[in-house]
Image 1: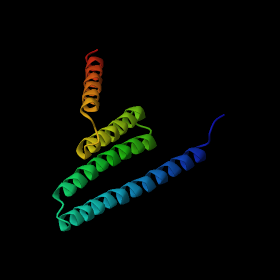
Image 2: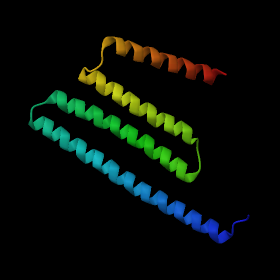
Image 3: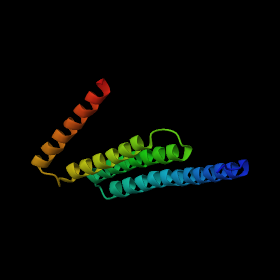
Image 4: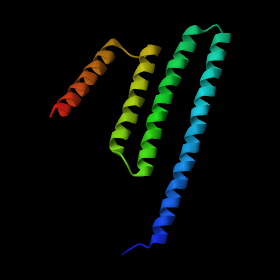
Length: 134
């Protein structure tokens, strides 16, 4: 079954429109993150809570990284380029690392859990290095 040129053009225009809508949503998301971070920092400074300000800055910075990873994944998926699995793994890794850092900063993680996470991270790095060398 062959598709006509008209169908291909329609699909291309729809894909470009969806990509443009996603770009606009990501732009609004980025502006929201910046405004929200400034608001939280101002609130923490007014409350004389420097540790809270630092924690909010770190958490929101990590949220921006996750947001950018997701943006990269979706745009690569929409364009049909790139290895979408790699982008999913990168975004997931950024999210898990954010959760680990938040848990460490809030003191909700025990020393044994921290050692286990370190061992898992070293194992993952070792696996990646061994794959890269072959």
